[in-house]
Image (cartoon, rainbow over all chains, first blue to last red; front, side, top):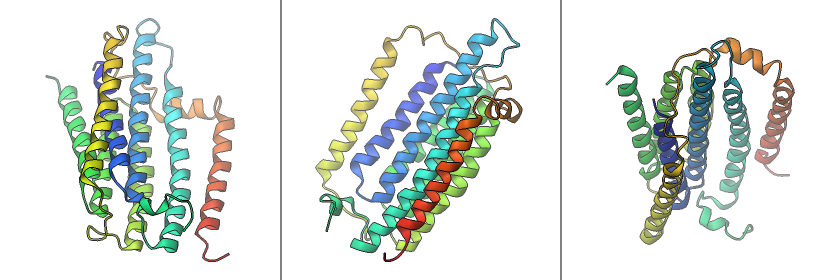
Length: 111
Length: 167
């Protein structure tokens, strides 16, 4: 598969995530759109790692390159899991205080 | 058209359609379910790229753990389409136009790069299997691996402290 297809797919997913962050006001949906953007970047990292492997394996098939990019994806997932746990705790606390998840009520950082 | 291409186009259409439905559905529960569809499609892409370890981790961590957490929070707050905050039509249009413009800028930028046009993605190899990934993780990336456990511990403490009632 050409790498351009994967780039365009990842760009489209990322842009849908950006549009979702801009158009929705529910804090949880905004959070989910951020997860979608992270996943688009993960997909692109894996595609580039296989592209790098293709380039090197053509000359030296015994070399094992490209595994680092997939470990980066693994660490991105680790950070995303930590981020989700803290972010959802913040959203639950916000819901307890103002009884809504509308981010429009949070524009003054106090109530 | 080979089976790999058919699978690629099918999974791409599934991912894009699921993402669009996720952004546009009124009910937050449906949004979560569509996002799980997107994650399964991306896991299918990982399998197509022969990155089986990441495909399994993606399903377990994202579709299994994170989305269940989202679903629990949404059901805890009893959110549905009725109390979904409404936004101005023009602001929605402006957000969609801004996202589309960002995509156009990215695509215009990668169209200019000559070096990427001839590059192919290898769907074989065993760099994505657990054997070689584990070897790299526990030799070259041992310190980041240990530090990520500290990150998890701090995130757990932070979530408990923030979520605690009263202070």
